[in-house]
Image (tube, rainbow, N blue to C red):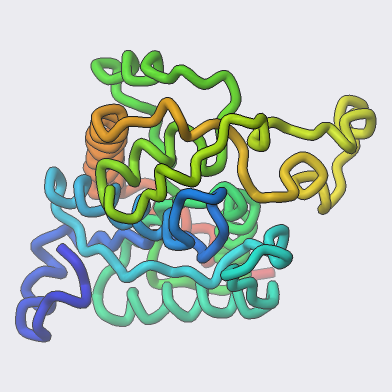
Length: 265
C-alpha cells in the first residue's frame, strides 16, 4: 500500500498490520538514453515495491529522488543535489517514518549511482542512537526464478538498455520512444580510462569516461514480456526479503546492545 494514498485513520491501522515495515524506494531524475523517460528509476522502484507489498504487506514511502547522480549533471533534466543535502534528506525521512510508528525501514534502490550512497548512509546510522532499524534489500532472485536471467540478448547492459527498457515497456509503454532507439553502438563503453581501471585505479569521472551520453546497453531487443517476467521475479524476491525482515529480532537487539555499549565510552 502506498503511504500517500491512505487516510490518516487507515494509516494508523496499517502500521501494526504490516509489521511496522516501510519500503523506502531510492531513485533519481536522470537521462536514460534517447528513448526512456527521466523518471525511469522512479517508475521501476515504485513498481517493484508495489508488487512486493502486494505479496508481503508493507507501507511504501513516496519516491526519494534527491540522491546521488552527480555524474549526470551535464545531461538535460538531471536533478543533482549537494551531497550533504542527500544525507540530510535521507536521515530526516527515516526519522519521520519512525516517528509515525514504522520501525523497520527498508531501502529499495532503483539507481546504480546510489549503491555507495546507501551503504555509507547505512553506516551513519551508528553515529547516534536510533529507535528504528535500517535495512538495505538487494535480494537475489529466488531459485525458481533464476531462468529469467537467461532471457537477455544483450552482452552489455546497465543503463537504459535491454533490462530497463523491457521493464518500462511493461510498466508504462506509452513513455518508451521506440523510434529513438539507435543501432550505432552508442551504448558500448568507450574505454577512455581503461588503463587506469584495469590497474585497479578509480576516479569520479569513470562513468562519464565510458558513457558520456548516459546510455549503456542496447534497448532494441527489449520487450514488455521480458520486463514483466523480470518485474514479477524481482517482486517475489523482495517479498521474501520483507518476510525475513519482519521476523528479524536479532538485528534490532544487536543495534540496541551496540548503542548501550558505545554510550559507556
